[in-house]
Amino acid sequence: MTLRDVSSDVIRRQEPGQARQAIWAERARMLRTDRLTGLSNRVGWDEALDEAMFSASRLRAPLVVARIGLDPPAATQTTPAAPSQPVVSFASRARRVVRNGDLFARLDGDVLVVALSRCPAPTAKRILERIRTSVQENQTCSVGWTVWDGQETPTDLMERAEQALTLAQERGGSRTASA
Image (tube, rainbow, N blue to C red; front, side, top):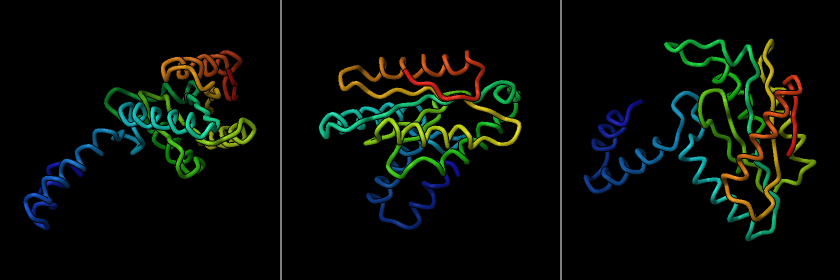
């Protein structure tokens, strides 16, 4: 469904002022959603991660961030003309494992991220292992995760998660590693 379709439908059902508000709300939602998977995209992730870090700081609660990447060859079975079916399938399966209230997003390509709020490390490890094993047959994925230290920036936190993902992949893939 396109924004034009939504706009036309909303205009038919509502007063012009309400219609404009509904259109802008839908447009804002669409700008934060990955079209391929229906997950949050980079814009939605960045905003939600900032909110999660603020909440974790205020509540003094743990926040776990993970980067998830499909391991080759599944990650390379795409063509420029066709969407990445392995990513779509994996995102659909993994979405069922993520708890309500946690953020699951696709940043780009075959890399997904998850933020687990108020989640101690042992619980996070179990959730991330369930995500890792939710791939289809003949596929594997690697997960790199870290617990926010309460001080670092979102960029630094994401870099540590990326380092952990690289470590998992360098160790042969199909594993979870922490930083």
